[in-house]
Length: 446
Image (cartoon, rainbow, N blue to C red; front, top):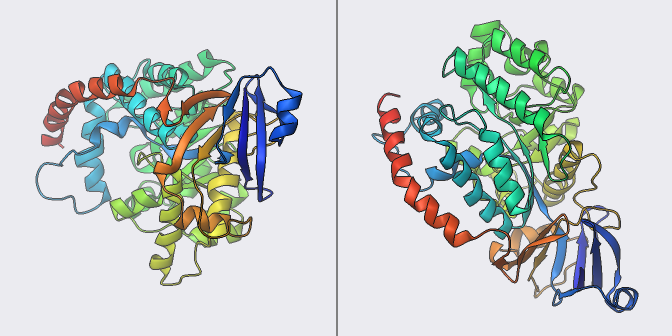
C-alpha cells in the first residue's frame, strides 16, 4: 500500500514534512519520501490518497480497562460515593462480578471500536471478571485480533473474592502468556489489583508463578487507603512492600502512583518501574494529582493511560496539561513538551518493551506501520516547536479520518473496515440490561 499526499509528523525528533508518501509492506514502513518519488518507485502499489492530511504515529494507551465498558450511563444506587474506596466497593467490584464471558467479549469490542475511531493503535489492558475468569483473556485477545489492533493483556489477581478465585486469576495469567507464544500484535503481562487487596501469600504466589517473566501490571497508591492498608499490614508503604515481594522492575507497570512519597518515587526510579498517569480518571474519582513534574525531574519512566475512559488519548494529553496547573496553582506545571514526551515517547518505549521486534511511535523506515491521519488544517503556523500546543488547543477527535495498524487499514475516511460497529453496539445494547440487573444485585450486598 502506498499512502500519498500526507504531511508526515514525528515527535522525536520533532519533524513536520509536507508532500510525503508512505510505502507500507509486510506490516512495516518500507519507504518514505516525496510523493512523486515514491509513485515512480512503486508504480504498481495500490494507492490511498491522504489528501494533504497530517500523518502521525498511532497513539498508545499505557493503562486501560476494557471490562468497564458497561458502566457507561450507569447510576450507582443510593447516595453518591464519598471517596474512591466506596466507588470501588459500590461500582467497580459489583460490576466486574456481573460480567459473563460474552460480556467480556462485548466490553472489549466496544472499546476497540472506540480505539480505532480515536486513532489509538496500541492498548495495555488490565482485566477483571471474577465470575468468568477462565479463558477471559482469550476472549479479549480474539476481539483485539479481529479489530487488527495491538494490545498487551493481563488478568487482575485479587484476594477480595476469595482464595479460589485468586488462584484462578494466577492460572489465567500464566496460561494465557504460555499459550500466546509470539504474536505480532498481542503480548501478555501479569495482572495484580492493588496492594490493599493482596495478601503477603498471594503476592509471593504471584511472584513465584511469574518468576520466568517478571512483568507485572498493578495499581499503586491511587488513593491514600492503599498506603494506610500497607502500613497496617506490613509496616511499610506500598512501593516498599511491592519491592520486598519482587514485583517492581523494568518490566512492571505501576498505575497511578498518586500518593507515593519521595522515598517511594526513588524506589520506582531505581527499579526502573514504569508509572502510568491517568488524569481524567484521577479527577473523576477525586483522588488527587500525581507528582507529574517531580517524577519527570527525578527520572521516573512516566507514561499516559486512560483507565477505561474514551480512547481519545489526545484528550488525556489535554487533561494532564490542565490538571497539574490547577492542582499546583502554577501554570508552569505539565509543560506541553513534557506532556508530549510522556504521551508519545515514553508510551512508545513501554510498548516496545512488550513488542521488542517492533519500532513503535515513529513514522520512519523500518518502523511498524501504525499510523493515523488527521484532517487538521490550522489557521496559524504549524511548526515543530509549537506542535504539542496545536494538539492541546487545536486538535479535536472528530478530525481523525484513518487508522492503520501493522500496515492494515482499520478505518479509512471515517469508515471502519475490520469491525461492524453497528452490530457490536446492538449486541452490547441487548446485553446491557442483564449486566445492569446482575450489577444491581451485587451492589445491594456491597
